[in-house]
Every structure is written in C-alpha cells, then in structure tokens.
Amino acid sequence: MITSKRILSIFTAIGAGLISQQIMAAAPVEFTYQDWQVICDNTRTCRLAGYQTEDNNNLPVSVLLIRRAGANAGVIGKVKLGGAKDSSSKALLQLGNRHRISLFINDKDLGETKAFSTASGDADLTSDQVTALLDAINKSSKIELVLRNTRWRLSDKGATAVMLKADEAQGRIGTSSAFINTIPVTKSNNTVLSPKPAPQLRLVTPNATLRANSNKKFSMKSSQLAALMQSTIKDVSSDCPNLSDTSPWRINRLNGTKMFVQHGCWLSAYNAGSGAWVMNDSPPYNPVLVTTNATDYDNGKISAVHKGRGLGDCLNQTYWIWTGTRFTKSYESSTGLCRLVEVGGAWRMPTYVTEVKVSR
Image 1 (tube, rainbow, N blue to C red):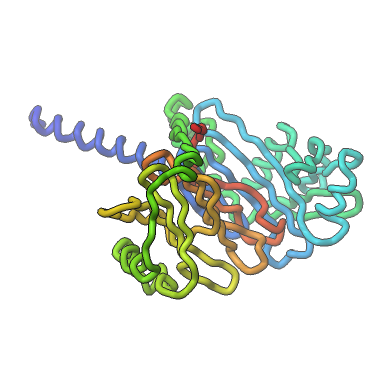
Image 2: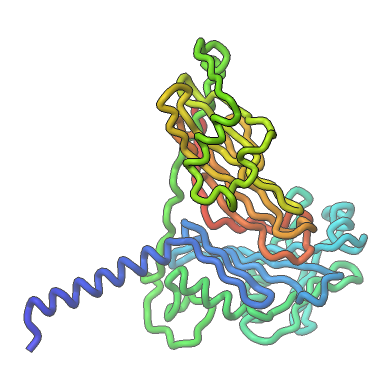
C-alpha cells in the first residue's frame, strides 16, 4: 500500500525534477557537432549555424537558423557567403540588389533568396526555402548556394544532432513542432517551453560633473594598487601575471565616491586582457574585480573581445555596464565556428542578452 506520505514524497520528487528541467532549459546551451553548432541564450532563443566542410575552405559559406522559444515560434533563415575571392562576399557588396543568391537542394532550384543586405552582409531565406532546408539537413542532402557561376556547398554533417539539442533546450521533443521527430508525437505544443524575458538593466553614465569638480584627490603608488588588487584575484600567476609590471594604471571616476581602475593583466600571441576593478576613492578601498579579460572601456561600458584564432574569423565577446553601484554583465556571445566566412566572425550567437536603458 502506498501511504499518503509516500505519495507526497513522489509528487515532491516529480515537482523538483520539473523545476530542475525548467532551470536547465533556461540556462545557455552550447553544442557543436561536425559542421554545425547550436547556441541557445538565456531567453531560450536558439541559433543554429551550419558551414562548409573543413576541407572546402576556398568557398566558405554559413547558414543561420533562428528560433525563439514558444509553441508557435517560426524559424528564420539567413545565408552568408565568405572568402576573399571576387566571386564571394566582396562581389556581393558591389552587386547590391542586382543579383541574388539561389538555393539548390539535390540539384533542384528552390529559387532566389531575399535581397542581399550590404549592411549585415547576409541574405534572408524565404519561408519556403527554410522549410526545404530543414527537411534537407535532416538527412543526407546536397545543399548549394549559387551566385552567378559559383556554387558554395553547405555541409549537412552534424545538423541532426544540433537540431535535436535545440529541441531539447526548448522542450520540443515529442511535439509536432520539433525539428527532429525520432519518436512519435505524444505531447501537445502547449508543453513547449515559453520564452524567458531578458533581464532589464539600466546603464548609468558616469557623472562628468562629479569627475571634473570633485575636490577629492585620489593618489596611490603603483605598488600599493598592485598589492590591493592582488587580494581580489584567485590565481594571479594565471589570470593576471602582469599585475605588478611597470605599465601604467588607468583610473577613471565613476561618481563622487567610486573609481574605475585598470591595469594590463596578460598578453598572448593575438589577444590581451586587462584587469578591471571598482573601488572606493578613500579607505576602506574595498576593490571589487570585474574581469581580468577587458579589452576596452568607454564611459561606463567594459568590453572583452578576443579572437578564437589569429586569423580573426571568429570572436568571443563579453560586455559589462555600470549600473550606478557595480558593473553588471549585459551581453555575452561568440560569432560561431572558425570557418573563414568573414573577418570578425560570421554571426552573433549570444549565450546571454539583456535589455539596456540609459540614465544620465
């Protein structure tokens, strides 16, 4: 006999499992398999990017599929042609709207994409093309993007695994809206996870008046600053080996009591990172570390942008904004796989997004 206490414990366990699944689904998801990658951000929007095979780098190409969470969310498709030759994106910038990219699947012409955007460097697929492409990458297919006499071959390798991961992240497995239907449809689309709202942040612009007119003067030796900041870093030898070198400290006032302090932390073959701290302008200083990977600071905004490799065809980016009391992460993303599609990376594939408003 199952007692009421036992029933309660069962329901408690089930409830805890459901809560755990919801928390996991809302967390960022990153998964790469062969020539495809999926990244889902904190709002549960998933972006799937496919590329050419690694042995076909003379004609780099990428397709981006974007799907928000929610039962009725559609799929947006974009295509970007890469390479340094005149037959690729450089030519597209010159051609403008006079020529469009065509999609061929298994040698069948599925028509032209929408107009190429010189601003974003890509072209939107039509809804019919997106539907056909989703079907094609679900099995072995020959997929080509054609411009005039040149054909860019998009790989289908890894697409199925990536689509399944996106279904899992959005709670679509077993529903009719799933990318991959490896099991019978047993659940209503109403069970699909809903979008999560992006956190709302307010950028507080550092007060220029206080900066200019404050009677408080901040003065500290470099060695004192280094000793003070060292206590905020878990592993100085790894995260900030240059903390005590002779390079200058950079100090900006944030408001009447807070200072923003920077110093070079590390340098590699094609990347560098600086330490960024907030501290009081008088004792107790109470320094708080924001990051040891900063690459730029501008009026309340910290950037950390790093190449995935020396060629610069892929980047990782993190940004923080000053909210009046501390720096808060406002955006984090990568630009997809390093496949020579474009200097600076093919796409923006965030793991963390926010809505930022500005206060002055």
